[in-house]
Image 1 (cartoon, helix red, strand yellow):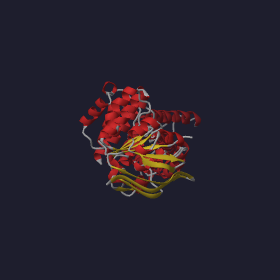
Image 2 (image 1 turned 30 degrees about the vertical axis):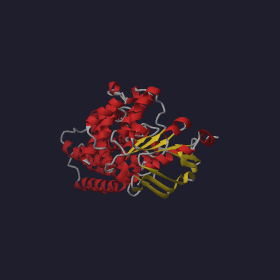
Image 3 (image 1 turned 60 degrees about the vertical axis):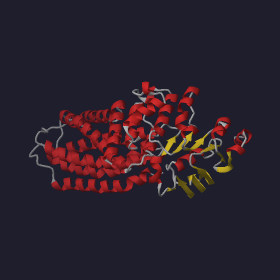
Image 4 (image 1 turned 180 degrees about the horizontal axis):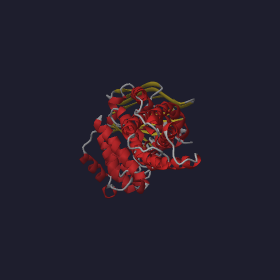
Length: 225
Length: 224
């Protein structure tokens, strides 16, 4: 069964159409990479799939549940890594993750496990406002996978990360994690390398939807012209 | 639900303890207002209706400061979305925010009521204390429920600093009226009596009605 099924999805903000007639299907454990210039609707698509925005038209099924009616059934099975870290700046990394662990009914040992995995344990007792953006992004990765989600929604996940940090988080959010993933990217080379399916958006409309093996970097570059 | 409320409440109090953005501001505002009244009225002491009115209006405006800040930390870094993604009863946030605001109001009153007695009040507070505590408690519950509802609505708009007070004030006026009428006899210089039962009942009913409205509406306010 497909992990994601989207048919004729539309979403608007007031008069402005952010997504229009977007359709796609993604099998479990595969990766969809979404390309498109700023304002193309990538973040809106992720927020709809994350149950944070209601679709205004079309049918959306995530992990077998229809949105928005059955959103409650999938919330705990999704891990979202957004532009904002979804964390509290005044709390420490450990306090933030313990807070999310309680919300997701996850054992506290798991908090230490993910802190260790993103190599932040040594700074885990400092408020996030004292950490660099790259470190905060690593804590955000830890938060996104804390509850071992089946579906990862990643909005430019490697932003602010240095090469060593990218290598560090790869087993958690990369293709090797074995999870179904939707990744928004501006990096044609890196994005194509990890994609099974490619979606190109421009002004909220689908201009490219194809198996990754049939897409070249030139076509991705064309999206941004 | 209890576990979620506990986690949210702990987070709220930790954030406030680290930032000290709400409670100190509310308390300082109340004390400063009493000082201003002290000089503006050109009187050494007040009692009865005037004392009661000054106390409740000051507490109301100080509460508005806390209401305006109630969801700011959640909105700034996307913590609100983090909560919305969790598989929990969303009413837990209503309960946690109401309890947080109640805690802020209790601390505010621990500072403001003695300052009021010291700077402005003529009669002694001793005998009035039990009645005053009951009245303040009923008023605080209403302010906390309405404040949470309004703050949740305002935080999703760009003009939240303006919209919060504009929405809250009309809804909080009946609490000020009920609180002031119930407190007035307690603060009378001659023959102080207990708080009139009908005003306490009015406050209690208002709390109950808005408690039910908040419970029914809060989930919708969290939706986009």
